[in-house]
Image (tube, rainbow, N blue to C red; front, side):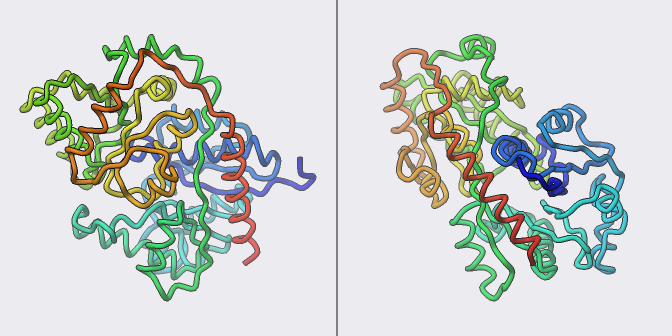
Length: 387
């Protein structure tokens, strides 16, 4: 325990419904800091009046986390002021009142005149690598936001060496301090008390199933899974993929309906099961007992679902992208992002090797992984403050 007052870090609230990975990142980070850097940092979450009360209560229940409600954080009411005048005045006033020492911006910009050291968390550069998946306005809005953060001399926080490679390629002249903080998960013990067998039965799943816990964004590539299941059905193989997660994508509101229509058209309703947004204990229950976790994504900054699977030692079937290789060091089955045959082969082979219900527990080395995550974030905060 440090003898000094904890450093107070501002975070803008991230809705789990809109971006489950961002919410999970914050939740795991706060828990990691509380456990492995006790008394050193005090995360302060700033949320507008429309923030989900249950989600915010879960964050506030983590030791050391504080919650501040302010209309300055309902949407981005001060964005124009931050861009033109250089300061989101009301947000800055809220930071000052809460005695904030450093601000972590996530898809927000509080102005180049912000008098508090700031870190810009850039999870990925998907809009540069896969521009065709973004409407023109959304792509340029995201690019403009990143460039304002870079121009505002933020310390840049990335989530992987893969993202760092992209950042250096797309912004070769940038002189900002850049840090890589690789995320790791620490499953909460209370979330492990739920009986997986009961959860599996509750969702009407067989004992052998594959789990796909991704939101329905186009780059998450659910369609490839539907194509693979079509191949398996044609082969006479009975394979079930259980998907969970939000169906909302503000960039492409109709994407989930397109995928679901294909599922119905191909008669795959019993093979592709979407159970919606489910409680964390259910997520962990389904993950721990799955034959394997599947992530067919075309792009990731650092996959939280891969980290969650690693924390339990769950077998993984992953798209063959650089960051998945970085996260798993070859300890997974891989397939091309446009190769449904390879995915179908992996699903069939893994299903043939399944041997009844197996419930996994947290792997012994996970404490070391999460401690390293907390230490890396702490070092980034210290660097930003020393600027």
